[in-house]
Image 1: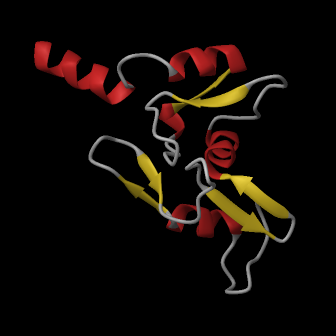
Image 2: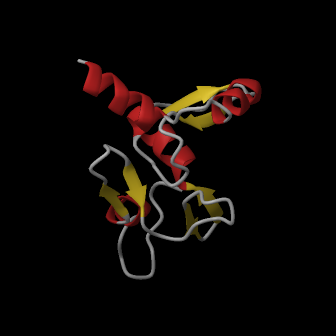
Length: 113
């Protein structure tokens, strides 16, 4: 996946990074195609991959068996490695139901400092 040359001559990594923009909140937002659920997708000649999973593997390391990638910021098209954590499905699901998003908790903490 990492060394694939695309028809326009750019590598997979170049195509991946060219579609990311930094949001004022600190998220690294995917501007390319998204799944119905809102997750970023990128295609190669071998398939379609979830951008957040690719970014985790490129910048953090392999995703351990049995774990999935949680967006700590709760933004599904964010691909910032610092906002991604490998967790169990149970932990990911429980975090998704928290009353306040990560950004809301961060803003409250900053206003109380």
